[in-house]
Length: 113
Image (cartoon, helix red, strand yellow):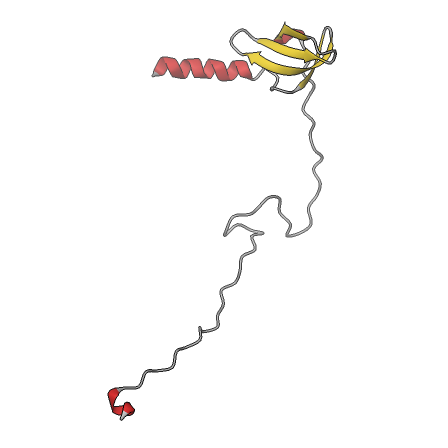
């Protein structure tokens, strides 16, 4: 199992330099969209905007930086996503403290007579 872990670590390191599928990239022949990656060979297959398909070494293409969304301050008490039960900002239904409607007491044999 140790050799597989070593291979997995190498694979994870190699993939960091690769663009994601469908990402827009710049090539020596112009802009295009990533179709597939060959991680071990470090090759990227790209469909250029003129519809031609070419393969480049990852070092030959320019991967634009990821767009970072601006950090918009949130209003007090507002939270992104759906908070889990017990987390701050979670809104949960309060238990109904009213007693459930009671059934009429059944009469005992003595009361029925």
